[in-house]
Image (cartoon, rainbow, N blue to C red; front, side, top):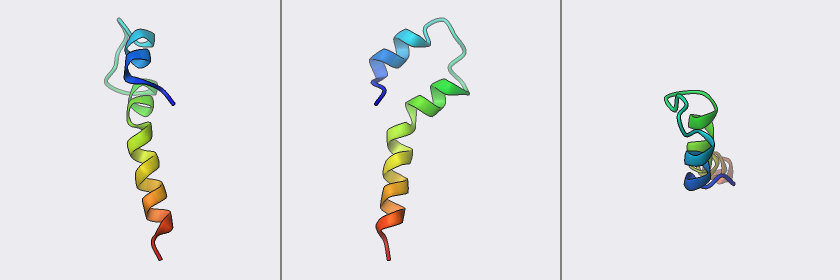
Amino acid sequence: MCSPVRNQLVFAGRNQEYGAYVLRRDYVKQLMMALGGSTRS
């Protein structure tokens, strides 16, 4: 997983509005939504 602190270090001084930063930032939220949706019958 990507911790918020690590993401801040990796993307310091770079555009954080889109692209890889957003994907990494929102990964856990998207993963939980996908898992929650897949377990419903």
